[in-house]
Length: 121
Image (cartoon, rainbow, N blue to C red; front, side, top):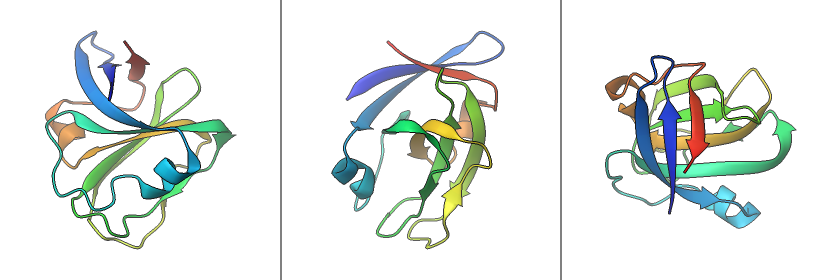
């Protein structure tokens, strides 16, 4: 588990505690078969190079919000309330370098928006 902050445009910081999916196997597994997430916990997906990355919720037991980030951690796009076990491919129109999965509703609860930055601490 690693610690991150979302630094909102208004200067407020939202701490996140994220499991890092830094291998192909961890990225493939994601949050499959997880039945609950604590507040501000989730998974951080780091990719080797920027690209268009897609997620699907097969065997995911909880709904999720997904943040797509560029190489400096700026949030490029946000997909909210993705239903659990959904087979739809979820992606971002822009090339991303990383992504974060959080429990659905987290983005709204903490007013996280496109343009906010995510940094590791």
